[in-house]
Length: 410
Image 1: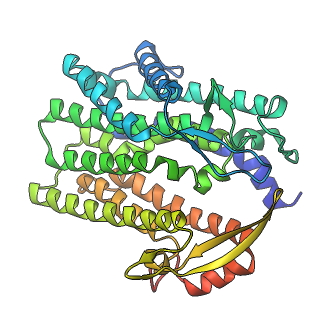
Image 2: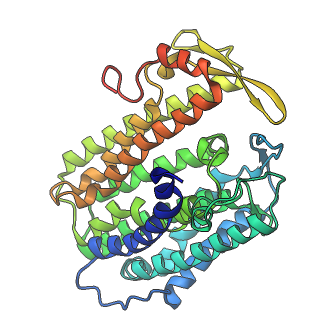
Image 3: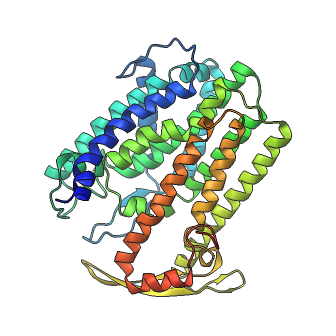
């Protein structure tokens, strides 16, 4: 085993587990009120476990209720995952129920804000229990017939064993990614806005940040079934990386800019807030348009019009366990401008909802910096996998669409 393999399989996973687990608690300390006297518990407390349990049960309930189902793409070993297609309704019913609860329990936003570190502790315990279960299940009672070469145990824990495991009758990744992590993100940023309002008075800049994040998450839930066709779902296994990430990392880091503004009220003026809102809405609109073009192209098998012209594409074929498959790589519309322009607009939006923290240094922009690193890394990771999958057709596609994220630059 070479040095790179030692780092990847033996050193990297335990280092990442330790640093990220500790890091979320550090974030809660860095962004919170220095005068907060709520005791910190590594295992959480009664309040935090009540909050986490209610969100988890609500998330499970949304996947248990009868309703429309969606079949995800078939794996190379012949398994077709099944998801619930009620995400958009789930978001708005959840938000309405939460705001109704807060109306009758007006101390709740500040109570949750002051207990945020313990809520993260409870999420952490929940995530570790789930990831250990998924490791054991994947080794002893896998859902599918897929055979994986053995790897060091810590790497298997970090990466995960199965692509589409199910627990309590629901798909694990839909539960952790879509129904717990992203719902927690929405409810937390709304809570932090209300806590800031109760503590410091109304802030238009803070409200703008929450509005942009809510629109972004509503767009995700509207398009939730499209998410099941992305590489996050198709290629990432259910382990610490993705499940802990959605159960703990998303509620901590993705909400940080809103959390930070409770103890550090925005300095941005009303006119500045309006400009930030305009920037964010433009970024959301363009990001949606990019995603729509790909979905429209797929739905019509390439026989469609984009930007007033017939769509162009590169024909590809690839081999799976079930035979040779054919696909098309879109080279017109926004997808002809850059290969990952959706990431560029997503970064612009993230910057917009962090901008209300302008004047407080780098801390309010931690999420934007993280997302920049994540998406640039994802660009290279995705392109490596696409190159291996499509071969010469991918090279041809890259010649036709030479830029990754910024036309003329990168």
